[in-house]
Amino acid sequence: MDWLQILLYAFSIFLVIYVFVFFYALESLITFRSRLKKRTLAISLLLSEKKDVLLSMLALMEKDIKDESTKEEAAQVRWLKVNKLQAKEIENCLNLLSSLQKRLVLFANNNEHGKSEEFLEYFDILNDLDANYRKTAAIYNSDLLGYEYWRKTPLFRFWFFVFRFKEIKRLP
Image (cartoon, rainbow, N blue to C red; front, top):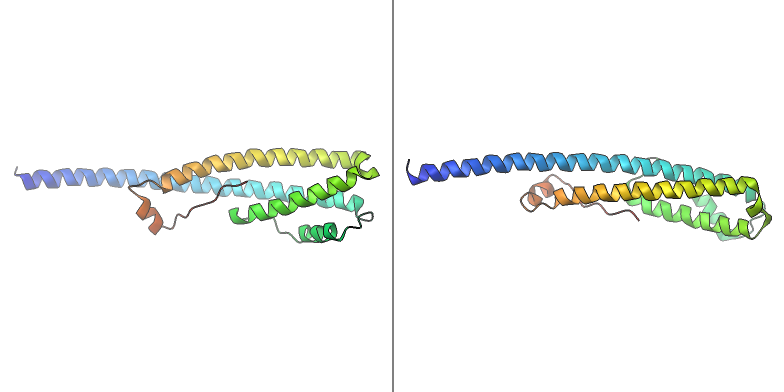
């Protein structure tokens, strides 16, 4: 064997290893992306439940609320579409729902509504939904770390850019 054959043999072995590692990284990236989609759907369901509970709380107190900004927020929440949210939309939706939740709890605590048993049940449900959201968001963010790890692998970063694996932002 002359030196050119040895060089070609070594290069072909390196190329085969590169291709195998590339397909492993691609499979891992696709797996993490599908997990992120499942987590996004779970978060959409949690936000949908939170919206329903907030609207039920609002129905209890609606005749007593005189603040126009609370009524405007309630109207925005009524028309809010939380089915199958994208990761970019989750933060805006969460901010709107949390703002209305704070207003309703503050209003109820300053009136007789805060002492009613029905309101306390809704309040407990909201606390459970918030705890479940935090757990789901933590799992989402940990899966996102795995996704970003494989997406930013130095040997394959260019190829993943070509295949349009884009950066995804963390959830709050």
